[in-house]
Length: 82
Image (tube, rainbow, N blue to C red; front, side, top):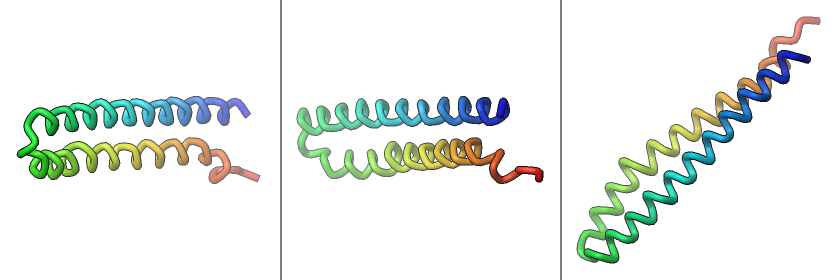
């Protein structure tokens, strides 16, 4: 049971990392909207840049974090010796 608590703690820390990703996307999205408000003619270019270089890598990082969290939570279940 002690091992399960350690893995749960690791998974909780990884899930907290997802909160950081959400905050980062929110801040950068707000700044992108602010930039388009100041210079409307760059809207299309900025949107393409934002999707390619900010949203896609953040999504992949979130996918990795969730995968590790699920792995740590289910590690004892998969490796159960009976």
